[in-house]
Length: 419
Image (spheres, rainbow, N blue to C red):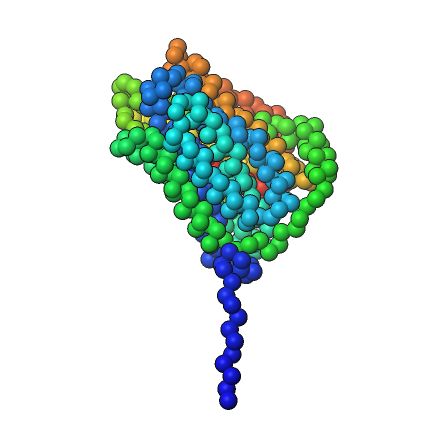
């Protein structure tokens, strides 16, 4: 008699023990998409929010600054937490929890309540994007596959940021800003479930318990002048990006442009050419060096910013595209230089960089608004050019020329996503 062979019970995919392969890289891209889907959603609707809540541009800009400030606070702490409890568990938990404040923001009775829920969103976002980077660095040992996975992740963050803005603008035009947050909450939930189903658990994670060593390493980074200069450069880079792309909505909503919410959302498609720039930026930096790449990228930012001063919509769009491309190259140069200059404890160095980076973004969401009543878009661009000049001076003064073998950007270069 032939005995039927008993089949082992299948395990749910989220409990699978199979190491990640190339097919799982798309789950990493989806995690990046979901991480940045909700971060900058109020940028194209800032004029609408200012009108609805009878608020100044600076007050409306707090809906951006609250998110980036919270990210600055939680990013280093999330890194330590992830080293203790694991990768996938924290990624999925952060994405699922992110649904709640996004949904609650839709019911905010006033601007203060909306800013509050935006702050809570910002506290949760690093739980997905910082930990996803650590996951990729650990799970794919093959350098080519890891680089491909990082590229997919970065593309996901860019597409997520653009999609969130466009969706928020289009839904606001049709059904109001509250409906926009409700739609984004539902989409965030769907993405979180998809990442939960698609992403295998980490196989190479090693729990870290020595918090004292991490604190000592961070203190050492804080007295290294080259690293401190790099942290300050990061501060200025996100300041410029947030300032330009937040207040351009006020600029283009006013005369002579007079764009509505949907058209303002489509302005953020100026980010998309950067998808062609990002994959080749690392190789380009490797050929010409970090310091020269930073200088050229920041000069491009200055040129793009100046171009937006023209009273011509195609010129403004071209300026935004050039400026964002230059900022992404400068960001790649800065974070990859960080990975080379920080010879030990790179995670703590990246955490410090992340904090200063997002503090810069917080000020970029508010400071131009304080000058808006008197100087409008010109005042915003003057601030951008000032931050650009400071970053250029810091890189020229403090960055050292690295040997050719050391100029290859490391995995740390992708830790922050691309807004």
